[in-house]
Image (cartoon, rainbow, N blue to C red; front, side, top):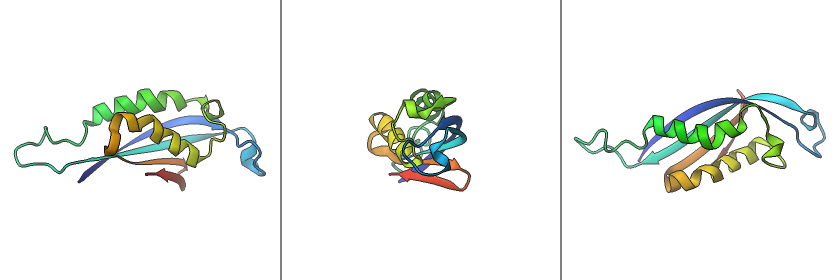
Length: 119
């Protein structure tokens, strides 16, 4: 299998209702999303026919279905408890109908050193 990954960045705000700690207050993040898709290996002479997914297509789908909905948004309006884990799960659900079993992994970075994965 070949795997390709595309990275997206967006700004969002959230708070964690009922959480005891700093994240219970409204605050913002520079979110990073990585979407990983896989497909069959390249066959000799079929370089373009055997692309896992055109990066432009991947970019368009994720921008339309995910980034445009999250960017400069209070994410609590999309999900009740917007942890990085729940955001990764939400992205997976939004994209699985498009990419099906080729969708391998979703990674949502809340900070450069903290992320959640759903696969």
